[in-house]
Image (tube, rainbow, N blue to C red):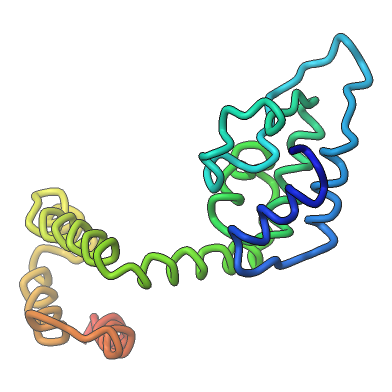
Length: 189
């Protein structure tokens, strides 16, 4: 099963878009040919087909490679560069804290958002959770304290009045940015 063709086919079946074919080629070729050079080196287990997107292969021995740490970091970078999705970006957050390619990270975030919004049930559940969290926060003493500190106590009531004039009880997503700009640009009036 650990053949170039099989691994590549699995990635192509799972992901509709490959961002960089060269990095995918590097990733797969490196793993197919990898051999630990030193006996006394720190190693980690790496799943060729990542557990997060290929849970069906999580415990398959052919899918797990014992690899030195520096190679492990490099492989995760190549995987993310080849397929820009959040699941492949997350390991870089702790393996390569200094890696911050905003274009690739933005692309991964955008794809995650599109995927979430395309599943109506999942999106509605997420939206309701966020809405409830915000309601709880907005009614909390902590929020009132933050606002009272941000605006002096004499202006807090005026701030709340202006906020409700701009936002009202509901707001449409297409007007959200415009309304926020109006509100924040006129906060001192």
